[in-house]
Length: 369
Image (cartoon, rainbow, N blue to C red):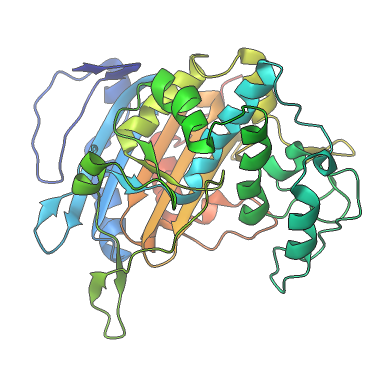
């Protein structure tokens, strides 16, 4: 079975499905049934109603499966084609838009933000808020740039410290829209990400753009635990702007298509890919974020990842092991995949799901040189 820019080696479509197939060499090097059992056990422990998962290795999907239910009341199973709100996993997709516009010479990542007409007013208003995300935002500095927003290094002296800031990242859509007159940020994501990656079951949504009807009908229902501990439907979220921090509905298979297209150079050039994956530097020291990705090492492996969290609704993990050309994608219809990663560091190893992935795919596996 083939889809645009994506090759499947194994696709069991639901938790109860049994699929016979001839094992490929890649498949046979991993205990995929044991990994499936581990994921479902973690899902049950975290009280996640529905979970979808995919693993990509060397440009091919070697594992894709759904566990539990996308809709508890109607007993509709979660599958790899179930759409979810991916929350902050949107950020790497938005980073692709910025880098493509930079490749085309339309956008300068280092242009002072003060040259964008709305920045001064936004920065002043936001810096006066009591939020921890506004603490240390110095609007008198002429040094803020789009690169600082996209690497979460805008607080304090720009470029010198990392502090995860989704509000500032969201605002990064404004400079991108400003260089393409009359085009919404959502349209730019469609043009530079969804279409070239073949992501037919993905869409943007914000206050002026309802969820596409076909995706809305199939979308996983969000749940949370009520005061009695029962899993109940979560209320609809509030209206959001057309920002770069979130606003994408997708599936694990479409995010796998994104992953393959990104690695194959179909979205950005190799030079831009290197820029995207290089951690922000401070006096020769790597900070824990690159352009659109958390950046860290684990057991000698080079990791880039992003989590997604919509409180009481959805959670996600997109984890890349760069030196193994290996990717894990998880989407859930509760906040159960989320873990409390500090705002000032990258600690994906604190995720029980990430640890299960490492045990299954990196046991005693030395990093590639």
